[in-house]
Image (cartoon, rainbow, N blue to C red):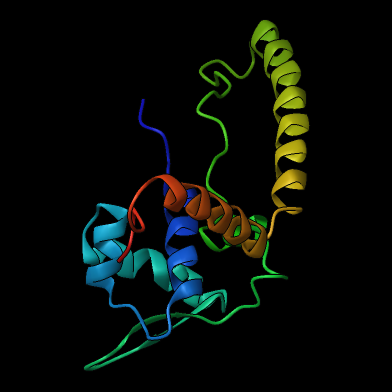
Length: 153
């Protein structure tokens, strides 16, 4: 089963936008995301609707961060992506009148809801600025033993 890695990919792109002086075109972001520019534009459109990014058309156009990284949480980004399912596991719903299925589904629902509440609470404490700080630290450590940034757009 494939994992939905959009949140991770979008956070990656947002960190690039945080460091950019100029707008970054979808084509360059697609390279960082190992994707297609059309996929980037579609994904970023949801972030634009949530006012996390802006887009500029024409020569020199592209995407810019428009939110405050110290106030924008990973939960904000997750919600801008449409709150994709957090778990690949789900309930069986083939026989809703089956009492065993009802009991199992109720127990699993409670567990899933508790786990989702814990995850979303954690995502709400993590800001884009905190991710950027961690990246900067990693980059300094890397630079002390290697040449250059291993991941530049």
